[in-house]
Length: 282
Image 1 (cartoon, rainbow, N blue to C red):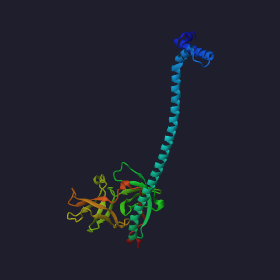
Image 2 (image 1 turned 90 degrees about the vertical axis):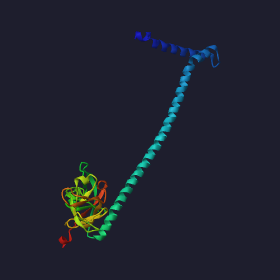
Image 3 (image 1 turned 60 degrees about the horizontal axis):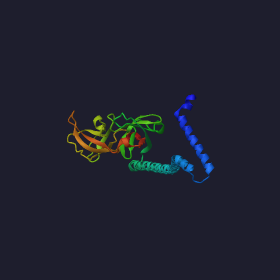
Image 4 (image 1 turned 30 degrees about the horizontal axis):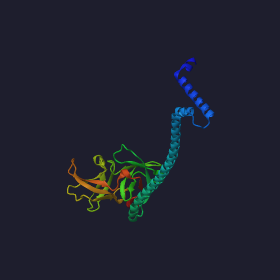
């Protein structure tokens, strides 16, 4: 405690307090008139007054900025809410547009095949490690789905139900090497089958293979299902021919097929349920 009273800081504070008290006494004794003593006091305390004035101005300015910032932040929040509402409406619009395209093409297909029964399904999962575009949907055996059912996007075949579980199903796409379906060129009538290929799947393609070396299948030809399978109807479009190549392992030729839709981007699909070939239906 003794060291505190002896410190230079304490002495400085004491001097300031003494000056303040002296100023107060002089002002009280002299009233408001200007005297030599009051002039000295004013000179001594002028820096303190300047600092106090600046502090006051700064506080007012900060208070004003705080009010302005609050209003500005409110406007930003309002704009963000408006943007959020617009984005939500845009998402709804895009969803409705996609569904409209999905059903428009499907209805055209149904007009030619009134016995087709469609079940709409939503994509609920994809395996990022699977190069063959496999995906899962939210419909299963409880909804009437069974293994081997055709899966469409509009009028295009995207795959088949590889495995149906009670509440969901796993879909194998047309680019999967395990996928195979009888198919034909709708222009030339040339018949063979479409299957996936590990190399072509990297670009999202499949192949129309085992064609004769003199094949008339050409660039732009439309390839559709031939309907030989009991679970796959005829005339569902698989895709169009991108290229014609010769096999390296034999003398046959194959066509590179680009699927009718980008399978990796679909969010909805249609499962063709309850289909039976005419021979079995009889």
